Length: 322
Image (cartoon, rainbow, N blue to C red; front, top):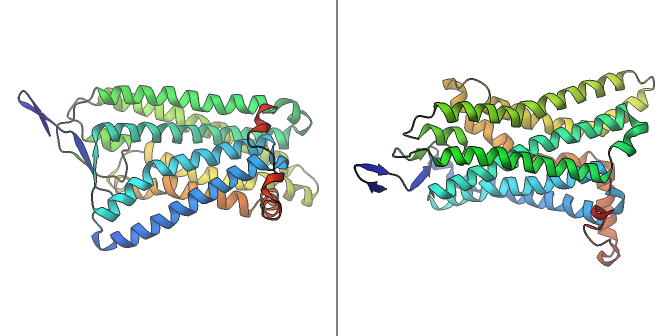
């Protein structure tokens, strides 16, 4: 606590996390530790496969490479801090550290939302406009889309953090969450939060609803096109190219909308931490599992990488320059 004049300001927050389950603390630590190791290992494996196998140097796998990099950073932003809390019982985080964690989370979550939308557009072009796919979805356009995702979300979250930095926090300093999420942060402020709540809702809608609608439109066109294919074999092949992506989209957008855009009823507020685990923990874990186990090209690249001597592989990042 820091006292300025007659007002006391807090210098740190207490992330309550799963502190109401003390008997399960060790079990939760081991569970989340295993999930974190599997998530980081799986996503790094996909990153290395895409970078080193020239057969995967296509727009779809360029998006997947960036998604895996994003997921690695995404899960590393919240899980290590939660693991430390479960292991040591230290749940304190500085106000500055909390703001930084919130900014990184918003940047990565928003970038993933836009990136998944870009991936759905890629599948739309591949299935609905196959003759124009190579011309429309080239590597430069892919890099432009990826860069645009990061820039847009960086600007949006910079605005949110700027507004947060002008709030006054004078207690209580307990945040009922396992990371510094925006809504719990606003709830512990002593300031008038009507403006930031309104702007946060608008900006969150730009991050979640816009990309979701674009994704929904893309998949409506994709499904319509697939159903018109006369051959059952070709229909199955066309759908298999986007089914993995559709599963990741459903998990990510479904829980994101439940947490941020639905009314804050008592029941949903109590379930927020549970829903948050889906897009902060389970989606990054599901990404390498879904894209590797359901994708023949990734499994083929993995098998090839195990067999071949590493020196015969291409230097990383070369394919980004062509």
